Image (cartoon, rainbow, N blue to C red; front, side, top):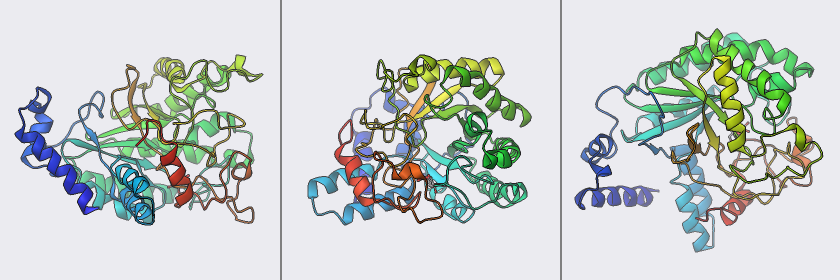
Length: 399
Ligand code: BGC
């Protein structure tokens, strides 16, 4: 671990003494060279693409998991690749109140040239249309969500005004209210999701933060009949929050498997393909973004490319659990060649499970038992070493 970081710092310093390229004269790099690991000297105000010109901070929690995973490998070539994964900047999921305790240790070391990335994920009645990620708060417990989850997070963020932070807000929640609204569990969660997300947006609206509200993926809100209701759902919550300035748009493909621009698209031959023009995420962004804009919400996207390296693995588009044969995808970057998409990001930390394959577990979801799901798999969020190895071996581009 130490070795890894010092190698990175060493090359940054070496770069500083080489003939400076025009880019190296830019203000962010100049500050970083002066003190490579220091936060900015003055408060950060994010406007425009927050990822542009910044590195994606590799949080310590994922790095630790990956370094431990590498240490238990016997194949040195694989080990070397795993060490590279430890340097990738992924999102840090704050999926319980207890998890709030790791935030400061990560924020305090984010260099001025970088952006920290976190997922806000603890709504009451979480994951209402599935079981694998049911959370700690019962539907209806919005008071606890506000006072014991959002408020303490806001208090920590307020201590780090000089650090750039990107947030994904509550994956799957509002999309579930669009397409699974008839399920009793989603009916029970609906008002809490809307109130909780609005509260989060309002309270987290700090100058150094950029927020993206989750919008599922092309195979979810991308159906012709879902685009407008989806955009209306997100925009209504955004407006109820008072149209917070630091909301930048939406996230797609979080923990997902869809390709960015594969044409004609993985499920284009399916019998119902005529009802969905969003056959890849690029098209989904191009269709959803204008709808959001019309509905009155900022409409820039970030797209999770963490595990979409391999195509053609799913039996059905909706299969979401530990898809077998998957590989890491394009590394986080703000070079997307798409004006609507701020960045390709790694939201799901590859190697952490989507859900347990143990059919006797309380949170067992049958999707995790399907033929295209990798087994055995541990509880959602916990480490699956064999799956991680496969993600490396199947990575595209390769490590
Ligand atoms: C789990 C979370 C976990 C996240 C990232 C979700 O599916 O429910 O507990 O933090 O994945 O791995």
